[in-house]
Length: 255
Ligand SMILES: NC(=O)c1ccc[n+]([C@@H]2O[C@H](COP(=O)([O-])OP(=O)(O)OC[C@H]3O[C@@H](n4cnc5c(N)ncnc54)[C@H](O)[C@@H]3O)[C@@H](O)[C@H]2O)c1
Image (cartoon, rainbow, N blue to C red; front, side, top):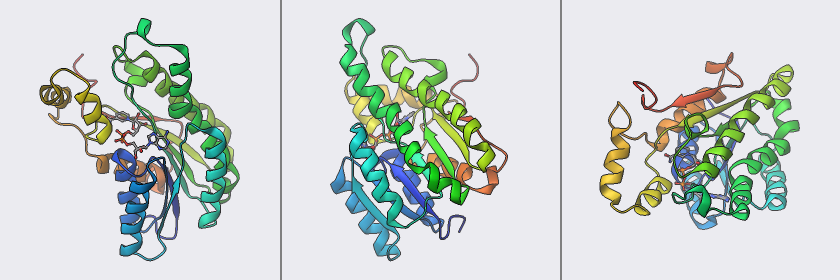
């Protein structure tokens, strides 16, 4: 029970990678707070966890792209169990493939708010609490932050911003014993991945092709990402800060 009597806040914790984090941390004894715009699914997840262990989970409705709403909800979340040991900035979206000339600036700004500024604002909100617990922040970035992605300029740029922010914040918080890291997944089998594939001409062969991009021959599961976050949130990784952990099943090898 590596997170017993500790509290984790997960944005976008109702589904996908966020849900994988929620499940892995809860299995290790954590109290879990989910912020998600899909309040119904978040409530269902929290209800199931409370059924397993009383008063061990809570859900808050929040669109992280609405920055005022995010700040207000973070204040409630921090007060809920009166401590925070880990914040996982996971909520994010991937728009359908779009060449740059077909995008518009308003869409880029909106995406930046959801995928990056939310990471900044939620981190700002926990600074005092996380200094008290000498906790950790984990940002779910993407391999596209360092590799780029065709027809996804805006998405890749938001993920790059998360990674740079991770490094700068790690420097700022290191004197307080607070560590900040990012996870850079390649392809994880989540509702987001399946929605993205379904926007392509042949979703099934697209998913097969995506699985084969990893030398391991498959996508990651959300729980595998949760396990990496748990590692980054415990003393198992006590000398690691400011890093982007590449979790890609070998996808970036053999170029
Ligand atoms: N799936 C992948 O292959 C992959 C790869 C690299 C990085 N990522 C990143 O991982 C994160 C999670 O992706 P996923 O695949 O699990 O997505 P998902 O769509 O399967 O799940 C995302 C969860 O976040 C919530 N969410 C989305 N936008 C939100 C918002 N504005 N406010 C509050 N909640 C919101 C959704 O309701 C959902 O519960 C994203 O930041 C994504 O960029 C995913």
